[in-house]
Length: 448
Image 1: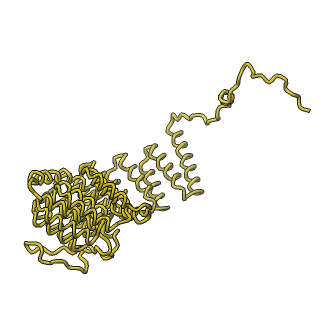
Image 2: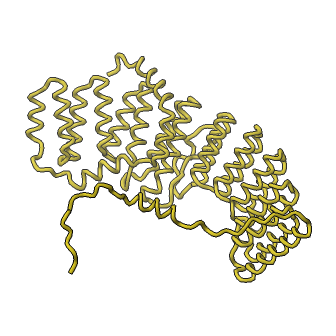
Image 3: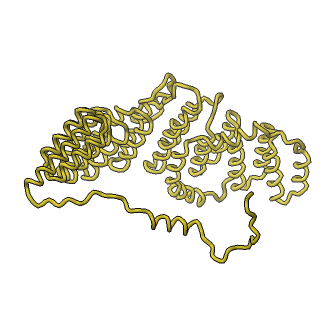
């Protein structure tokens, strides 16, 4: 029978778990390590090396596939300053698995670290020839030549790499390399090869921005028109619209799904902003917006952003009638919440209260179940001091909350006209647009 403890009070000396572990560690015997061997004679050194090499060779025979053994063997030979033997070990390792690019990287690093530059070049040449799809090998090779100041050699390596049609980052790296030395013409020729290799909208936009920065207006415009012509579909729109014998823009994606059109529409927007802000060509800007709106299949889907930008452009040109016509067409062909609200804001800024009321009435005809539209209309009347009108509107508002799935979809899709990255890029234009808006504001007085 177990003995019962009568005194259950806490002991005067408490022992913690940390104290137990510390004492156990102190009482633990030290690990047995082999004694350090001091070599004083060349014969003794030769015996040591012979024994060590035998250990490595025996290990390799057992686990020939283990690359860490090869790396340790080569590094040991390097530590003995026997570079020829170290090189031989690396070559033998590559015979086992030449597809492992890390072996090539470590081999070339060994040659560079010990300043065998020609040997390093030989390693890089063989590595890039056998594994041309491994970008890291190319980057490391180019970096070595760049650090050595061999810029012509680095350019030749880039040219060899581009023959394998690598991804976009490789091309952009080559272009950046040439721009570092202010080689504008070389960079332009690389861009030509780049858009041939990667004929997508993003590549053409980069090309156009390059011409805008380093070229002139004529070059940039030509680049834009080549871009839209590159994606020309089956639909042709107003071939003789532009002056100077330019081709019409008929860049229609093959599929009528909105997700395929987002980047395409951004190309139009960027083109229009360029014509307005950089080229300062009002007629061309208007033509770009008109063509873009004609090209979009509004019966299937539309983009509120392009309607609003076209209208805002006309406002900046102090052409209010054109802006009203554009927004009226938008309401008739592709009504969206944003179009109604922005139209009301424009008319309110111009002081046209009755026009605002008519727009809100159209808004409610289109979406009578949209509680947000009713609320906005009531708030509008209340802001004018028309309390009775506001109360009447709220009385007419549907009592049941009908905007379930449909209303949520409207709010979500309207914010998704263009990809987020393009939205961020467009913000950089806002300061220039503000300047244009300021010019319009000065001429606004007296416009009805």
